[in-house]
Image (cartoon, rainbow, N blue to C red; front, side):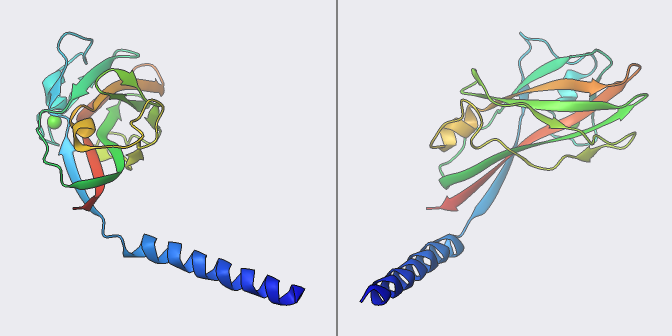
Length: 183
Ligand SMILES: [Ca+2]
């Protein structure tokens, strides 16, 4: 009798696990990428050509030689509601000359509430490249249930990171990638 009960629970557990697995696999997810298209001219911004960080041309670079220099980016797009937001990520395109430097992204939710620091430690020398996507979905102060308005209202502070003196840090664009389940 006791053995039979254990067997029942084992079968039930396998059934439940397989149900969860099935749901995860069957969800169709799509991605939508949008750029940060404007920067806040009322705040600090990078030393040289700050507009090149938001001009959507990956070959034009803003640059700075100032330690801790930062620039506050905002989106410039009204978004349609394409479905249920599952994940939100950021990436940056950058390189350094002269001496190595990291670059740090910090999301600001609703343009106001700071998220976590996301640092790219492998910024290349001389030729720009994209960082990996950095997941901000569950950052400090992030919305517990994302919608498309939250994506629209997302801002990002781009800051010079650690490194050596004599640097020049170049940044051409920051992008948002939304992973969602279409309605
Ligand atoms: Ca650019």
